[in-house]
Length: 488
Image 1 (cartoon, rainbow, N blue to C red):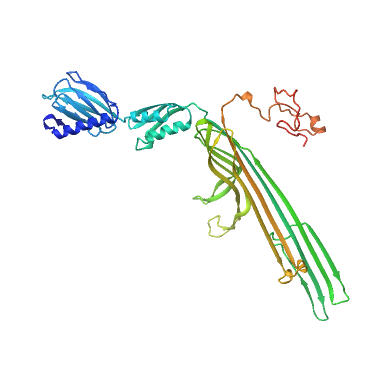
Image 2: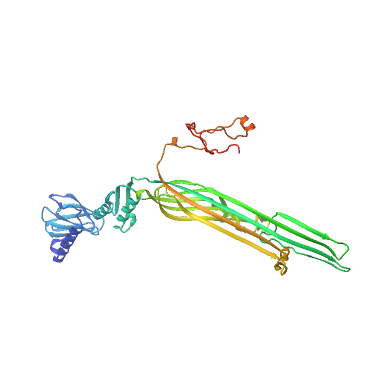
C-alpha cells in the first residue's frame, strides 16, 4: 500500500521520465482511464509491457492497493492523478481509497506485449503480405494471408526476435500459393562384372631300379578359392620302357561376364514443410538381444530403393528440397557369422541341445543426401557415381614362374573387375489435385482371355484399350499402352 504523503519527489521524477520515454518509443497501447463513479465502480485498463497510463480520479485518493506489484505499479502524482506502469505480462487489480478509507474505484489491469513495433516491421518487410499481429498473454499470434511458405517463415522469424522463447510465437497464417509438391526421382544403376582365370598344372613320374618319385604343380585360383569352370584341357604322355614313365599337363581357362541393371522411378507428393518417405524393397531380420526369458529379440532392417524428402515452397514457384535417396541390396561381403553351441534346455545342468549357427547378411549401400533449391519442373543430377574395382592374383612355382615365355607353364592367374555407375535424377513439380476420372491405371479395360485364346494363342489378357480412348486417328510407331507385349 502506497500513501500520497509518503511519496518522495524523486519517485515522482522517475515516474514522469518513464512516462515520457514510453511515449517517445511507440504509440501508447493503453487508454487513459477517467473514472467518474463515486461508488465501488469497476473499470478496465489495457497496458503495453513497459508502457504507462494516466488514471484521473473523481475525488482525492489517499491510498492505492495493487494486488500483484510484479505485473503493474502505481504512483500517485496528485491526489486525483495516478500513473500506472506495466511491469510484466499478466493481470492484476488496483483499488483506490479516499482519506476516510472508502473505495473510490476498482481498476482491472491487463498487461500485454506491445505488438505495434512488430506489426510495423512486418508491414515494411513484407508489403505484399496481409499479416495481423496480436498479443495473447505472453505469446504473439500471427494471423492473415501470405502468398508462400517463405513469407510465412519470414513473418514468424521477425516475431520470434521480439520474444525470449520461440514457442511463444503462434502462427495461424494461411498460404494462398501452391503447397503440394510432387517429386519424381529416377534411379538408374548399371553393374558389370568380369572374371578371368588362366592356369597350367604340370605333372611327371620317374621310376628307377629301387625308387620312384613324381613331380607336379598344384596352382589354385586363390582369388576365388578354386576353378570356376570354363575350359579344362589335359595332355598326357607315358613310356613304360624308360625311367621317365609319364607326364601330364592340364590347362584351365575361364571368362565370365555379368551385367545387372537397376531402374526405379518413385514418385511422391507431400505438402510443403512435411516429410514423405518411400521404400521399394524389403526388410531382413537381425537379432539384437535376448529378453528376460532367453528369447531372441528380432529387429527388421530395410533394404531396397528408398526415398525421403521434405519440400518447402518458396516465392516465384521455386522449391527448396531436402532429399535423401538410397539403393541397397543384401550381400555376403562383410556378412557376420555367429557360431553355434550347446545349451541346457531342461535346466538339469547338462548340455542337451545344439544351437545352430547364424549368418547375418551385410548391405551394399549407395546413398545420397543433399538440400537444393530448384524451380518447378527443373531437374538435377543429385548423384553420379562411377566405381571401378579390379582384383587380380598370380601364383605359381617360385623362380620358374618368372622365366620369360616358359614361365606361363608354371603359374596361374585369376582376375575380377567390377564396374558400376549410379545416376539419380530428381525433378520437383508444384501440383494440384485432380478428378479421379482423369487418371488411368493398367487395370482399366483389362479383359480375361477365353480358354481358346489361352490354349491356342498363349495369351494372358485380351488386347484392350482404356475406356473412352479414341485411337482411330493415331498411328503408333512402337509399343504403346501399359501392356507392351502380351505374347512374351
